[in-house]
Image (cartoon, rainbow, N blue to C red; front, side):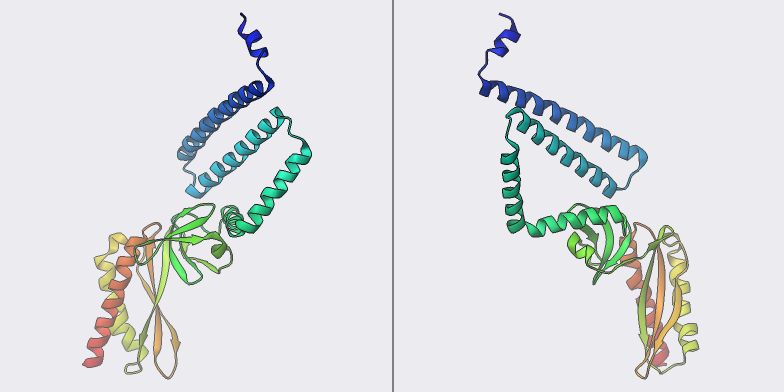
Length: 260
């Protein structure tokens, strides 16, 4: 018997199931091939990881939409039933998963607007750290406590964002406070500048520029100096190790000068 004749003799239910399985298998194979192509192309073009995540997400959404449309067409589901099902699913998602949906929308916003990229050092509200990954739900930060923090993208979208990464390096500023026991020039000449010189000489290979110092504020209680340190982009761990060291070197000179 001709295999085609045997196929035509199948019951409508078996026929539709067979067509659906074959179509879904073909779609799945094409999805895998396209996903692999995107990964290889991204590696060749050196695309940012967040851009790769956005492309993979778009591919998944398109694949699911295509597969759903094909199955509904094979089973000839009425449009009214499709609309009713969509409304029911929408209501379920609206009541049960509103936070997840908001987070996904915020993730699209972060991926499209790109207020920062992977390996940028940022401050998001009261949080700070190096961006390790941007997904549709979370932005992963490598924090000064040497931990990986997952920040919901809704929080990212609703927070003030300060990107400290420019021109290939991290421009990180911290404050050092002093009393009024010594004049400003003496603090700079005896404490801050010598500490910066020694620090820079000892870590010249780990920095791109010599640290800088400025007088920031002064009131009746004391003064504050801003110290700016320059670290190569993507080297947050180096920043976390060197910044406390420079601070300690400045304060040691200050204590010695004050006690003398």
